[in-house]
Length: 100
Image (cartoon, rainbow, N blue to C red; front, side, top):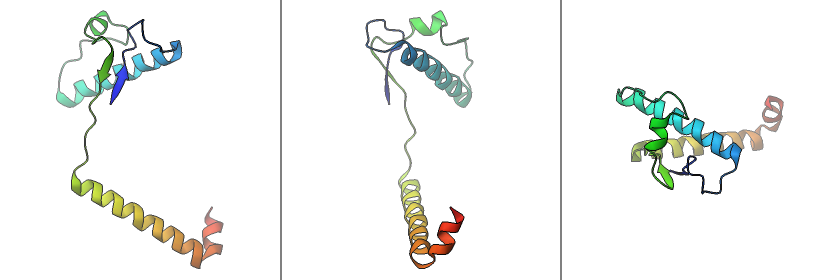
């Protein structure tokens, strides 16, 4: 996933978008440090170490890919749940709508 660099003054981000990105990218950094066991030297979203280490335009935040088995399981479960819900709505509408 790519984000615009919130520390670059020449991009077209609004102030509230810039603040949000700074905070969320810092949170991603903290979580990453915890997961890989790295010491977090950066103290906050406006830490000079963080600002100087930023690339110029875009920041890449890697997301974990699901394995083929996970994707298949989630899809199958989703269809099964949807099928059960639709079946109840068609064959037992009173029960279905009372739960809502």
